[in-house]
Amino acid sequence: MIILLKIFFACFVGMAWYHLNGVDQAPIAGMLAGMILLASFIKPVSYQDPKERDEYRTKIQEAREKKRILAERQNEEKKLLKKQALEAEEIRKQELKKKLKL
Image 1 (tube, rainbow, N blue to C red):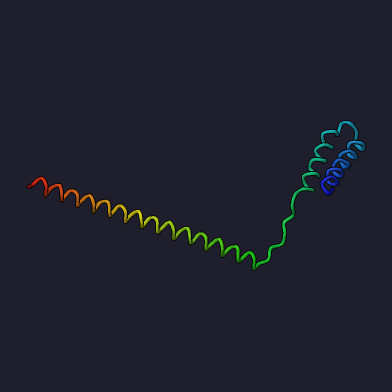
Image 2 (image 1 turned 30 degrees about the horizontal axis):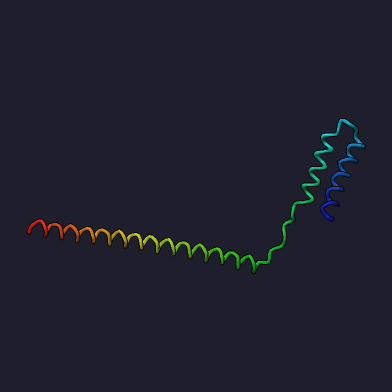
């Protein structure tokens, strides 16, 4: 219902502009109606409670910290896996050398 009233009001303003200023102002009347329609559907900025805003900031900071810690752990695991792979390769090389010497 409210949406229809907004559309009706924008059309009414556009028609009034058209009738008051004549055929030459038809594009301006259309733009005016469109701008009023657009302005009527824009959501106004609402008040934010400082406590809620601070809670939101802390949540974001905690999430970023968790991501950073997780990334560090993943990097450590990658380094450990590379180290283990190198050690396993060294052991295989040593075993191969022992087999070739026999």
